[in-house]
Image (spheres, rainbow, N blue to C red):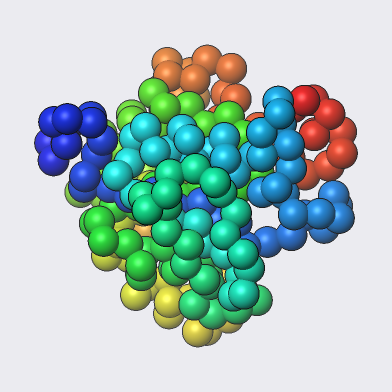
Length: 205
């Protein structure tokens, strides 16, 4: 990789963003504040990302309080630029606020992000609009790298009311990571375990 901070090993060409603006409807509580193995999920995520990126953005709903106690000035809280429109707006907000040309974006309910897998995705990001993991028929657009240059296309979709992320992905020049590539860095596919129900939370604990 180029553009790496020699002292820290962090990728200065990239930023990270955690989408933390939604509430868990089935859980009835804020997913980011859930406890897994004695720590809030958001703190677990931010701690991993700070080992890779010089800056981590927490994308929240307007008026939400800061979520993570990790990282100090290296963690920046930004509010959804267009309230109430879901995760596509979170992606747009991250791209619009980013100081880096590429942004790794993930959801706040995924407590086990893999550093080796994220680094592999960064290695493949240049020259495409997005790097997205794919397992069989399923893609992971909320554990993906996006080029900041796609923000105008994202905004256009939002303004037209076309808010489905999967439809955006079909319009972009995407490099897909296949299962073999994913397994080489994250053999148990734990990065994609997300907490939607009480049962999921019990598994994580």
